[in-house]
Image (cartoon, rainbow, N blue to C red; front, side, top):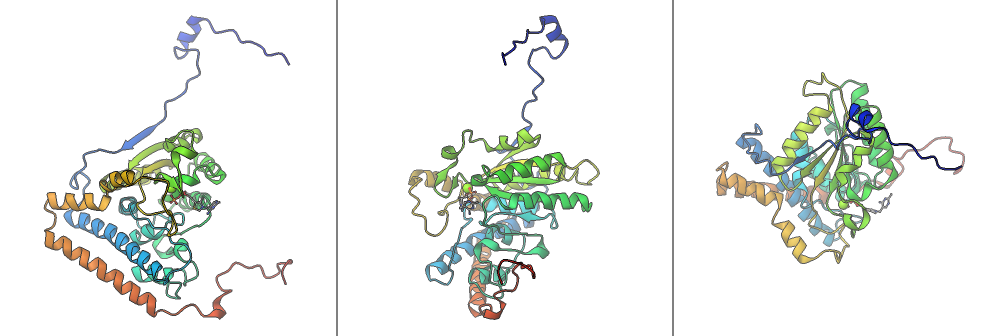
Length: 375
Ligand SMILES: Cc1ncc(C[n+]2csc(CCOP(=O)(O)OP(=O)(O)O)c2C)c(N)n1
Ligand SMILES: [Mg+2]
């Protein structure tokens, strides 16, 4: 078929519409949560709140440092992906949202689980594969769960949890809980079809969900710039009609303030009277450790690492606390000692806990009684 050429509309007609011959294309609705100049007071946080958040970030860090050591001693086997460097994201997200807002994430899950209040005993025992672990020792590092605390895992299939997270947001809307689901995934998952299918449905059904890409710059050894034509991941929700936000993930106060604002917007206002909708969130963060324990890290330079370590969210928060005299040096040392003691006690707990008895091997596994193919 021969191509037909359309005649341009006369200039006066164009002026009568929107002043141009182009259709009306709205600019991306994006907000940047960085360099906001927050203080704890401007965010409505007390000194005790800041210390609790600091303690929580430190707990995640010390828990994982000890886990790495235990991995070296072969107390932990299988995969172990550390969250070290990303703690402002987990703590900020949990403190900025409600305790019953459901959370789901990928396999780099220890930090969010501990932020949500999972006990270090249950977490460490899970890493050791022991019966008192949060998943009865059968899930391991990648499958931390604490449903009572609204923490729905811990998922090993890259991108697989995104549709489930959108479904959890849909449940909040359907059951009128006033909740908003927090669906985390990595930069490597954004090219998966599951993300795009879930994003479309989230927008179509106006689901109260924060679809959050934790951009730590790498998926295993592949940097975002090597795997993505446009490394501005925040644009990814825009084709589906979602608002976007970018958060400085190395700053605790930016994370807290942003998650609070965005979660309340997505749930239709803090009182839940407005219309719910999804928001696409890119958090810019960095992992200081390798992808997993067996990563020689040849894909990044020492200089890059040093530059990123100068942004360490825990060090920054500690400096803030000292500068604003929210605690003395002795009090900060005491927090560190308490956290270390809690983690050591968790290691002892995990050591003493038994392995799951062999008879339980087929428990907690989905089976269909009349499955015809395996007898
Ligand atoms: C569907 C699927 N494909 C590939 C893998 C192997 N794999 C495990 S982790 C990973 C990288 C994911 O990186 P990212 O999403 O950025 O998360 P991060 O490790 O940085 O937290 C890949 C490709 C997998 N687990 N699932
Ligand atoms: Mg990544």
